[in-house]
Image 1: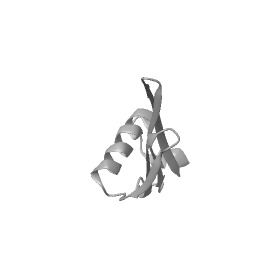
Image 2: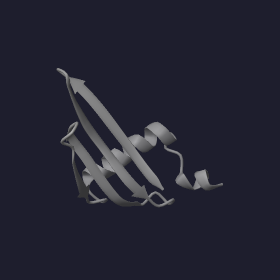
Image 3: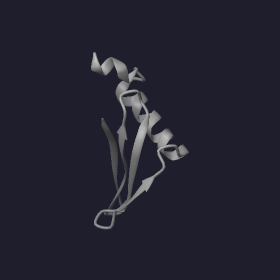
Image 4: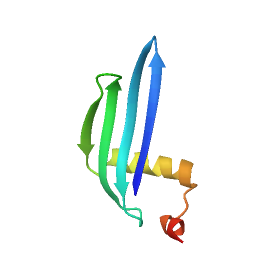
Length: 77
């Protein structure tokens, strides 16, 4: 499953992007994480460890928001 979140901010006429794209197993295990950040037109992407505090925090906060912290197994039933 692919899970992603992108936040676009605009301040003083400049747009910037912060986001994550994650591959996740149905059991909730994070497999890979790609982080994107920077000004529009100059966004840099980097792979970060799926076990990093940053990746786990991003996944958990979005999971609670979008999935209401439900178990991923319920999505396959």
